[in-house]
Length: 394
Image (tube, rainbow, N blue to C red; front, side, top):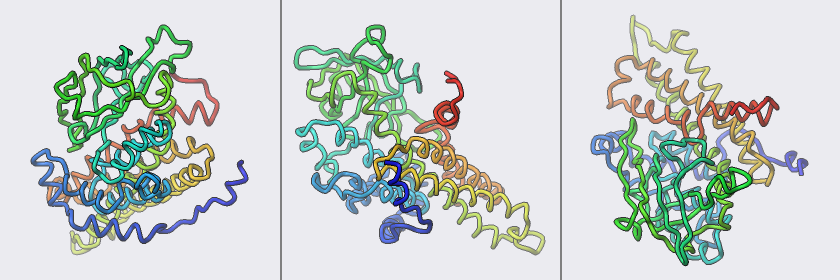
């Protein structure tokens, strides 16, 4: 199987040039002023999401048989990279691209036929992914939200946090415990995945509250109080849910890391333009090595991270294990984007704090990549244990 690696295309440069140019044309209609206005109102970028939907980008990974574009993972990554490199932000809708993967890979034929075509067209939004809880964080096996079978229904009780876009989504993918942890052989067992209809559940045991944060990410807290949902909301087999969720995490990490790469490119481009024109002491500040070197180093880091992520996407497409590259790529991309952000902020000086330059907005947005969808420290733990063979640290 490893012989497939020899055929993987890892050429550098701007791959998928037609997609890149098309995404840029969409993004040009949503300049910095658009995003600043949204932040002031703490509003959702409906027009931007609709534009991406109409262009077919949010259904990129859904097979053509279900009305999607049937693109490769690398092509989807390019879409997200260009969105962020253009100064926009895909955080409001990127889950529409990959959350459906659980349904696609593990759902029944009836579930696929019912939901995937409508998700591909944008008629239904599946953007809410309810996993994290206030008291368990990344220790997912200890989550406390319960789903108890009762005849033809499941009754759900519990709480989720950082469930972004739940107020702007029709459907929610939910991970809940169906068998108490003290009744399973392995703590990873007894967790199940449900696809529930938010519209049918509101005021019937589901409550969603906005959670104000450092960036306008439309995130929420979700509360379940004896919410009754049909048993056919279950995805796959009961008790196998954690496996289903983990199955899609490599793709998610590759895609979100592409956003970090895009942000890094935006910061680099913005830095170069500003320091080449800004004159202090009768010379452009970009002539100073103290200004040049952080930008140059960040650029090198971005290019290195990009290559690792391309390898991850190529291995994913070839059906080869890609967890190592997906995790390393996530770590490198998050760090590279942050270094580019810091250099850009520093080079702009006081103007970096001025909202009209958009540097401070992108600076805040980029910091999130070191925390989500997996934190830098957890990636380091993964590398130490699974790649280097060191003792497990937790």
